[in-house]
Image (cartoon, rainbow, N blue to C red; front, side):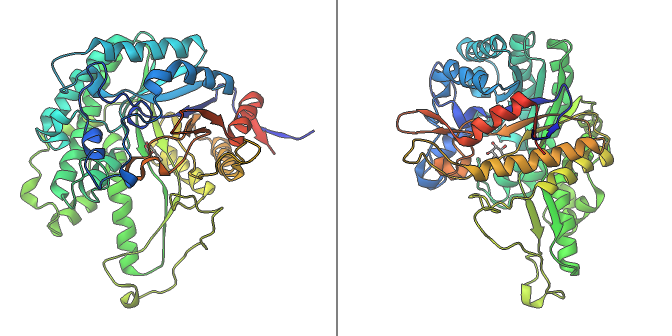
Length: 460
Ligand code: FCB
């Protein structure tokens, strides 16, 4: 008999999605326009001109989708709520039909024995708020609290696990620096730090509201932290590595866990004139304490290892030429161009627990993009995805053995779906989506995951 690596008794096996990526029905039942509607409708922003207008039509197919989750054996499901379905203009007028959709979804999940984990903000900001400055202005953080109040009043009796923001650093860096995500600003460093600040602030403000409306609930933020290694021993690379870790990871974790913004990074932003010294007045007294309001858990989204090289110094002028790099094959690199590196998950989990003393952690996203399609036998032999997940489950188990309080694992994603700037071209699903017919087909990895859940463990 094969030996099993067993997970702790209450460990949750789960999967994740987000509203804009799956729902479709972009303008139905009174929903307002979001910044992702605007962005994807702007020519040239999303690969192949794909949009989330229909996505995988989950808005109309949620019953059938929950039935699939039940069949797979999922114990929990992470989804997000589209703010503009609830308050089309971001504040003020409430649309009951939007609330009713999520209410029906939650009832359906509970009836199937699946615990709902709801994310309040997974990037689909009401466009009306963007028109007033979006997250760069404090009033958007205030509007977020109003929205949080409305939706947690409606669902707080049944949803007991709440996540405020998904990946604040991606909202900041992709939305305001690279411009690859909505609202598509490039190199707006002042806009970036202001955005990060108001996201963090709104997270802190929302916590007591959620607790009041959802007695006995647990609340946390979802951060993304990949494993970053230093590419060489050159001074330029060391500085770049520290800065990269600072703006992607420490900026948020330090703020959430009461250390304030990292002084070295703030200094660098100021001295490089990216964010001049006179531009920091958006930080008001008390803000840093608000952000550090205690939470129950942190959600970690982990995907890959990065190897940092400075791009400030051309490679040939760098004082150290030995650069670490894995050979690029198509098993150890996913179609996103992300390196498969399970050990990194263990390192990042350990860092969260030992450096920040986080009381409880969920892996809120982890998964791989491979486009394996139905073969002549009608099946989808995506063994690379199974291999990816198995390696990461093993790393998670090792972290648990080290004492990390990891409570559950949400595979990204349950279905192939709209992958932001990549449109429908990147497929992360356990379940294949045929975008023409909306047929859902289980991939081999989905059958494998069903087995893992049943056995509550993976083969030794
Ligand atoms: C994360 C996002 C999620 C999905 C995965 C692949 O950054 O939170 O929506 O797109 O990447």
